[in-house]
Image (cartoon, rainbow, N blue to C red; front, side, top):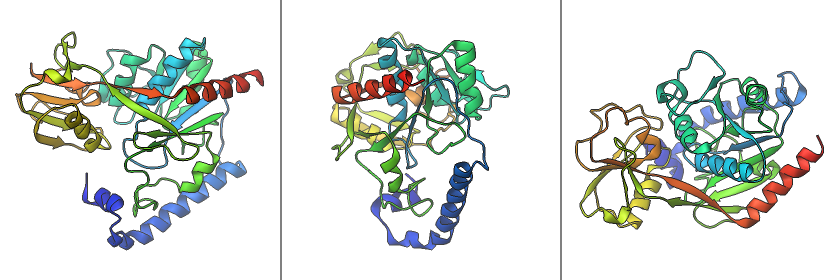
Amino acid sequence: MSLLEKSWYNKNPLVVVLLPLTLLFWLISSIRRLFYRLGIFRSHRVDVPVVIVGNISVGGNGKTPLVIFLCHWLKQNGFRPGVISRGYGGNGIDYPKTVETDSKPEHVGDEAVLMKQHLGCPMVVDPNRPRGASYLIEEHQCDVVISDDGLQHYALQRDVEIVVIDGQRRFGNALLLPMGPLRESRQRLASVDFKVTNGGKAQTEEYLMSLEPGQLVNVKYPQQTKPVASINRTVVAAAAIGNPQRFFDLLTTKGVKIKETLIFGDHHLYTEHDLPQETVIMTEKDAVKCRDFAHDDWWYLPVSAKLTEHFKSDFLERLLAIKSKR
């Protein structure tokens, strides 16, 4: 975590020196939203329901596991979902670009590769979200589009907005960037359809989500798995995610003895020299970028989202009501 990020969550009063930049950020964001509201900036509606999974703060809040959960839940209930993502960290030239199981993180982004391995449904990356959503509908016959992130991307009209909240860090000092971690003020939460809290304790009108770890998977030989409890030696823990401490804490609660933690910037593109040739445990998001040069004793710990029955029924009811009106 950078010094600035620590200041957000430690509520360091010195962030006040960034007030001019925060005022500028607020002004630009407000004008942009106003222009969309007035129709000066064009907003596009597609022919099927659009579900946005996003957040109002920066950093890893748990959107990816929730998107995967929603896709599986929708498929179980007879829908044909598809996922649109910005493809952050990728440099694909031809958009929209369909993500395949063997796509490279440097082309479509690490989160897109991770999700595709679990989704079981079409996924497209495109910085132009309306174009990508239309492609999912026309080329893959999707009847629901789930947008990974994109809460602030108003060019794509949406039917359902889901905000994921970090249950441990919440909103830090509750200030806008760069004085605080917020992309939009907490007032934005009043207009969303579902507030999902990842870990911690859900507050009023929030749905609790927990992340359930699976077995360790070998990065180089993914057919090899073993229980976390089988690790009987100290390890190096590595993470290049928005909130690495959550991952390290998870390992500790599972009895893993960590001798060293390696923290890289979110979406860091690993090289073979970044990690030692000894026992390393990383996140699945890290593993997709290390599989081409992985050491024999590198492992990743996958996690899956668990939602309450209350959320499942409320979400499905809302989506069915939207489809019945179309």
